[in-house]
View 1 (cartoon, rainbow, N blue to C red):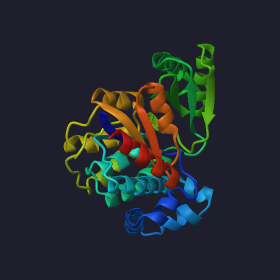
View 2: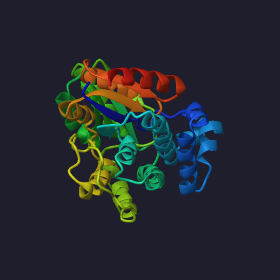
View 3: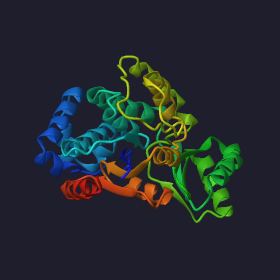
View 4: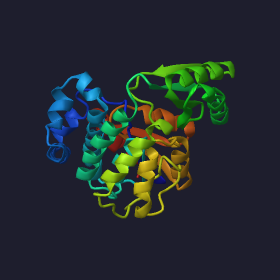
Length: 313
């Protein structure tokens, strides 16, 4: 067996009750929720386990909720002796990856992403921006189609998720025009996404600038394992690079395909998706069918992953 990579869920995977059975079964997971509640100054456990979908769906709540759940779900793996050789996270998940790599303290990360969520939502009034998933086209064709639709306003490739799946983001009219153009170029599907803001495009530059000021108060540490950055798709060189990359990440394209390829080139052949949902597992399978992929979001998936990974070690 080669190396193990931990990968962390992004926004959109959240649901009421996520991580509950792990938190109830593992003291170390429960302790993460306690730390989060102290850092945020409200009971995040109650919000996630007993709250309502509408409250959880608010970006400023979703972001700390997913980071908290992801880091809690990671604890039993570490206790079982399963540790990462490299980490990455999709968009918001990059903060969980930094916590896993020791480069950001958990309490700092969870407080920071709450503000990140607020800034991202405030930057673009609801109804002005949107996103859409484009299925079945090469990345370059999607970029070309966005350029052709730019006469209608801002529209850009926001996520290169895996071969044949690209998300675009921008102003509503421009995104609609790009969907029309890309359908004409042979896209199998162009699906509008139910999102509250156009993430990872130029419309979010201001949010990144506000986030940068918040990061002035945070200590970044040396990474204990390599972290693949969304902005570059490559490993982050040093701790001095973390802050500028996280600032840029808010309004830059997420190069997820490249992140996974970087980890595979480094010898990672076993990926464990940690946190709610299995979206990243699907992306990894489409990037490279030969790697092992597991996930941890509840007791059942945790037990299966521990059993299978230990058998590979």
